[in-house]
Image (cartoon, rainbow, N blue to C red; front, top):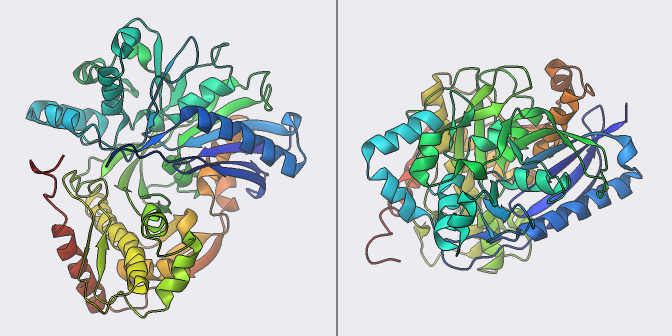
Length: 505
């Protein structure tokens, strides 16, 4: 057997390829950012062709840096930004519209139309485990079909394909118009508002309600199992793709959260906490999502509760790009630690409304508690605290739904290098926060899923032994102070609600 697994980790702001060895160590990587297009307030788009081009380039870089070829790779895994929606022509491979990114809120009118009927809203939530919200892919497909000339007619003729980014990459990697396969996995399918949690297949009634032709939708497969081999015209010629998961599900897998009750939190563009609930879906009563954790071929699916937060790392990008408070994201920790606290300022980054546990698309961002005492350093600290407070809200909901209080939180993602943030997180949760030695857990999880399917790793127990802690943060404030700060945060959140009304576009 070949010596390595290659994982493609396609995220909201960048694409990464990593070479993983049997010990779960990353031997080489390549990474490139792609452009963020913001044509209107609340709209976020990517260029799918640019993403595919970047993917090929980072694969080439990773292989070159490891001094490897496709002959050294046993299998390929893919993780991806999940709800981001691409529609393309199956004959030419050209997208009919830019990718509509998961953060985008242009589909609010479609969502309001559907939620106006209580029975329709309840049906969607019961069958999919999701609230009707702009976050998910289904309404985005509908928007493309409604707004691109000729798209609906072409879709009904079977000429257009839909996919989240995993499907787009897999189709191109396996040949594109020259025989590319049109597939997705259960985790990505579970983010569309179109997959029935009971059957793990597309639901015709839900598709009809959204106005999405079933012929557009990819075949759903287990996350770890056979998909297809890479096309001869790629650098990965003949290597089987055997793992596909949405990025947060991949991170859960990479964090070795294989047992019910184990949870991770990823700090990226947004924050995403997933709790393994076992082989039975748990219906949230507190604003969380019921989703798939993963499925191995021939085995029962494993479900999860998820708390999705829209804006965390992207708040730091906003401070850098829009306000110019820092020159690079890495500077925020030094700036924030130059003051002992946030000076009374609270930042609520509801740029695209509030996601879990509120699900309030009418909210917009606010900075409250401002006085002349507040400096850019205080705002930097408040921005980091906003990430920690939003995670606290999700954890409270997760504890309420599961009935089992979390005793520690495993963390990963780009923001976990920030020691101040991690300590603040432990303080505001009141539980230890643990960072693993390998923090690129989305890529690692995709690699694990791919490797398991081809026997590169034997079982989940072997993967669990690869996980090693790097650093642990213990809470350093008392319960009274913790709750005082949390009350101020919740008061600030109320100031963001009901902003979008008839006076706003």
